[in-house]
Image 1 (tube, one colour):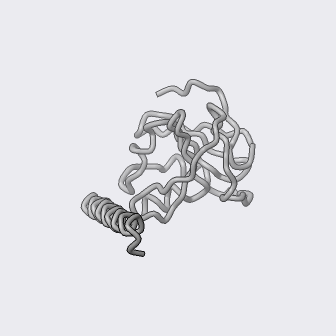
Image 2 (cartoon, rainbow, N blue to C red):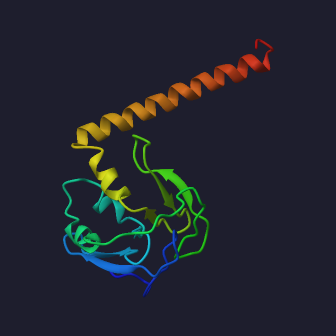
Length: 158
């Protein structure tokens, strides 16, 4: 899969990102090797890298021996492709890692080490599915509680 752009600037530190080819997946990713170590994934690339069994050796090799600058992860970042503000989103049902996601083009930005942290969260599909089901159940329960509270408030019971 070929990118539609020659280079992009890192949304976290502004450095030009380098392209790294992932042979097993058949596409290029953009890595900030001269700045913060961030990783840009185009729309639909994450699902080919999100499991610990998928080979990301070329990424690890690109990072080897490098030091990276610290960046403010709380800052709102701009998409390097369409220049729209990105949104902070949890990358898994565990809700432990926030990444930057562009709702316009579907791209995702991972700060240094976040992809590997995400990949280490689950060791099986069953474990991941169980967490997703629990999150969905918790969300549904929370919605029911809020609806009950709102209806009681509406009728002056609170």
